[in-house]
Image (cartoon, rainbow, N blue to C red):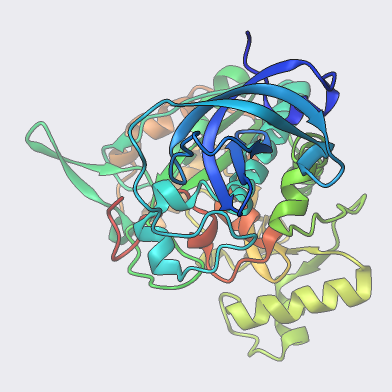
Length: 425
């Protein structure tokens, strides 16, 4: 007899024999019978045990149950299994460190993180990562349809991508190397090969931030493509990608969104844009500020929602002094950059923009930092052999999911977070 998943049982014929496998999610012993709930990857199945001689294993033990499928409107999916034969597939499980059978996981965050391999079994917690998985499907499918090529770039690098102060140094066969802060240099070089590229992979930031929005390792969804006019082309592509991610959540993770309490956004046909200098004025910040504070981002998000009815707002034209050296300046005013941040419900989700593409511009930008272009020889090689005007962006996956479910801490949606204090599990 083949295995039947919980989600398939409501479509099977009552009165037929079925075989399920999963975890003992919950057992309720009454005077005359025992209700056993078995959990698999698709949901829950109720099993009715009337024979007092049947031993029901403890919660989280993996089991196989064969029995008769019986209609019962009060059971999950409207069916249950009666006349069961229960076989444990492993030794009896220990009592879980968190109560997985409760509708909500009420444990403290440290308890959840310390016991992540078990805590993620909770259906509502698991649903959060199902939102991430669906988002990744939408990210990839949107870009595949637009002619992009998926790439994978090295995570050991010889020098810092953006700032030498924020990298993890490692011993690479007796010489120093660093964990990549981003695939920025490589994805730009590969624009010269494939024209349109994207990557899904980990990035590492040795920033000593102990906040609810920062991690030392996170998943970055990187995009880079050529033959653009300016950063607005990049923003337009970002809009299509985010819309594709939202559509994939609806298509592949609708039940998970409901279970996780996600508020899936509506992506406007055109994302509203405000210039950085106007954003400073709107939030009442000094006009010489070089960045937006978290409180500024929240105020701007509230303004975008009230004014444009949008959960998204792009802030363009950040000062060049704040942006990496490869950022393209505005052609009419070099103080401002052809770059942007995308705010999603009050949190910076994406940084993107147009890059430099002329070798002479790179030489000038690198020397302005007090560095020698020769130190970037392998990076600049592709530009000296012809590179189109190009740009790109990067989305933080965990931040995206955190805003979908409105988590108070990004660690709540990260499978195994790495930060200042945590290197296990």
